[in-house]
Image (cartoon, rainbow over all chains, first blue to last red; front, side, top):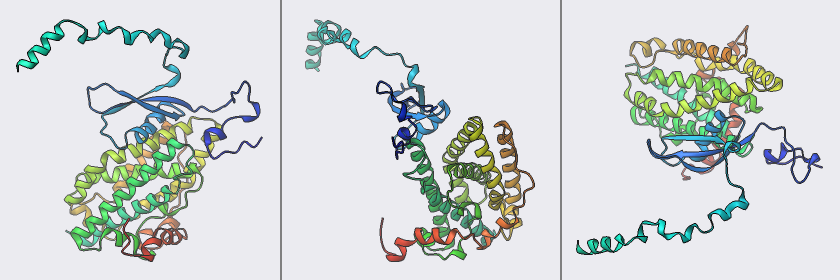
Length: 121
Length: 252
């Protein structure tokens, strides 16, 4: 199989040894999740990923990928494989959450008093 | 204040920035990976920005032509860039090592200029300090990673260093009146700059487990500051000045 691709990520894959749809790679390039902080003290917000050969390089790339236009105080990078998540099929654990309106501040009686106060002023 | 020496300093800094900016932008679209492509292209844009700011200083304070005209309508022998910036991009190992050697020099040059008695240079130096700091961080991160990668990456970065180091000394070719710049407290001079740069490069190279190049003879790389260039500059200028040559009033 012709392994030449203009996309280096594809070019690095060993397409001759694909098993179960997964191509092995000897690349050290993995993905890092990038978090952007626009002001000191504010929480960093997840903005995307970069591919990099080390956390240090990931930071270098993140600067030009995610901080080239907006105001920036700092960036965080975390190796994607270090992030623990639920399995996609477990999404049903969140299914009834929107129904639990008693967890929303507007559910309580005090709401009427707030409205009354707002109308007064 | 010695205007000739000062103008010479600003022009060579501007020409270095313009030509390395153009050269490094040749990687746009063909960089080794997307993320690096974007980072390297952004840094090239920064260099063109530095050149633009410097040409504007020449325009505003010394009555030279506007930035576009100075950049795009000047013949080869009036350019005072050094040989280092003229060389083709080559393989990525050369481009990275050149970026490392060049931006380390830029860092020290602009750092020295933050104390310049010529305010426009002092202000510019303070403004671009952060940009150049990132350029240096980017270069250091790459060189350190490659030096500690595998046998092949280490060998390639070492041989690129051996090749590019003598060339890099062309950055420090002296101007016609260094003494005037030093005594007017405009700039501490190429000799002082080269000393700071060499010490810095040596520290990095040793830290990364690489070897400093030996038996260096940089004589044949000198002359750029006086308008004597490599064979690589003329084709670059022809390409860069093409649009301006067709329509000098074109806006883009």
